[in-house]
Image 1: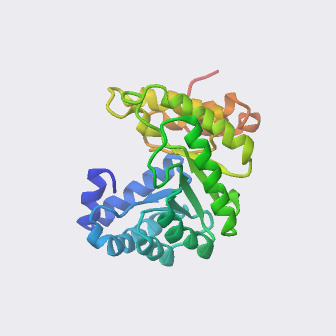
Image 2: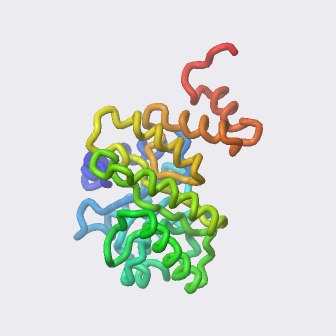
Amino acid sequence: MTRKSIRERVLARDAAFIAGQAKKQEAAGATHIDVNAGGDPASEVKDMAWLTEVVAEATGLPLAFDSTNPKAIEKGLSLCNRPGTIINSITGEKERLKSILPLVKKHKTGVVALTMDDGGMPEDLEGRVALTRAIAEAVKAKGVGLDRVYFDHLVRPASTNPGQARHILEAIRITRAEFPEAHIALGLSNVSYGLPNRNNLNRAFLAMLVAAGADGAIIDPCEEGMMNTLLSARAALGLDEFCMEYISAYREGKLGERKDA
């Protein structure tokens, strides 16, 4: 519900529109559907219940419950907790860990972990790495395996934060080396915020994230060329064995117009 068009349709209870969006995301190649009911904090729990029921009916994909409100997350989980479900998100903030991490353990979900804490968002590589390590320790202390954690090193806009992208890529490499069992999934589109032709930057940076070791990203799979870039990057890097995902997508017409070799 961070997008105005989605927020308005949820508040208007436009089930057909919301279901249609979920189906489009699935058809485009999404692995999870993000469910965010934060448009009106006063009604978030009620909105989360309605949104979860509509989306769960429209798609069989696991959901990612996107909220800072433990009650809203628990409401969503009570209605749909499929294998692969993710809570989005925890941080290194003490209250956030205290309120959200027990839900991860209780419901056996995955969890996005944002590298920020009570001191805010780090601007440098060292701060991101230190928070990754601290959050990893906090998660393990609660008996949650790191294979259920999706680290998000918080992409910043290239237009206002020069050099931040390089910190992100190096933080991914370090995280992958130190915590090979963990996942790394970032909110991609922040990199292009405030710039024209945002799709150009989004696609370029997505390929860089894959090369650095990220195995997930929060993206709009319906964005032009996005899945094409993802599949191409995986194929080129040898992450798609014998390029079978790429070839299958081509045969299904998901890589653009088919052309004879």
